[in-house]
Figure 1: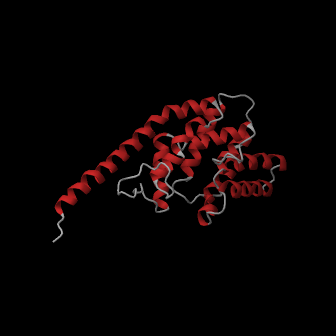
Figure 2: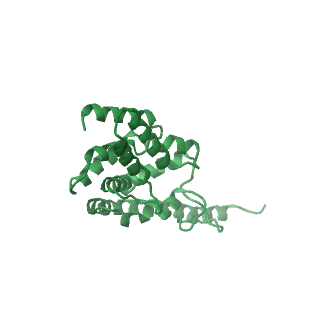
Figure 3: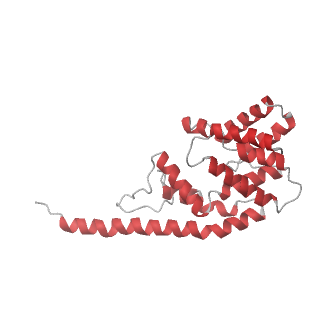
Amino acid sequence: MTRETYSLLENYMLSCMDDSAHDREHVYRVLYYALEIAATLKDVDYSVLIAACLLHDIGRKEQFEDPSLCHAAVGSEKAFSFLMEHGFSKEYAERVRQCIMTHRYRENNPPQTLEAKILFDADKLDVTGAMGIARTLIYKGIVSEPLYSLLPDGTVSDGEGDDAPSFFQEYKYKLEHLYNRFYTEKAASLAKERRQAAMDFYNCLYREAASAYGEGRNALAGLLTDS
């Protein structure tokens, strides 16, 4: 890929990014992770991979404005149209589109090509470890969702089986189960190194919240009178 082509794709990406949890730095990290993974593999089409990494989240704004939309589907079509409008071959544009279409965390639309699998893994790596925790907390703040929910007895739920969205619910539903879902050995190895950091943060936060409600509520009850 020429520097001119890279700049064209990068500038288009920058014009589409409007989300602090899925910002341009997330895109760059995904690209760098992808290149690290690709270096351990053979027959990678770097031109397709770089384009797909740069453009994989350009549909985020549309999904944020209308949650019924899938940013992977929207972004894949935007990328295809952009590439065709700028003189890339239909075959190349289609390969990039397929990578973007399948990068989202979904079981019914898995990535098929090597480049798509690398993008999938690179994107998921940015949801693991401390970085994944930080990004999830940022996003929860953006959409005004709480850290945790309370159980009927007034104690803090650990998120397991919760229907109401919260950081704890997201951790139990998604973040905790990411680590065995990678396609490449390199990504799985990198994720394994990060797993403990995420577990430690979640466990510490849960203990602190649960302790506050347990001890604090008992203390308050002892100070309140009926008259």
